[in-house]
Length: 134
Ligand SMILES: [Zn+2]
Image 1 (cartoon, rainbow, N blue to C red):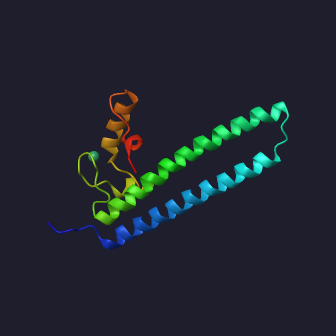
Image 2: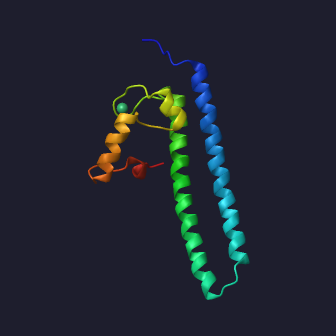
């Protein structure tokens, strides 16, 4: 069997993924900077305090999402280097280009992702992203 994933496509997704990783990193440091600024600026009367807590919560929440995204993107880049990018980790079928265009770091084809989401929602399946050791 020959590797018939055209190099140009791989190179294209590599670029997309690298840009995404860069974007997320930038957004994370921008948020960190913004948070520091808001800490210094916010006068601490009571109304502002709860507002500040709210903003911190949003910040942490968003940061967690960014971390998760960054990990998914770097996992995808790793798969790309290993030469099995774009292959569903569940059924080992190629993931459609349409899906990769929408979610370049997709691990599963649409069908398997749906099944996994259903099982996670039902509590029958651990979200493996949470278990990633890296
Ligand atoms: Zn699949």
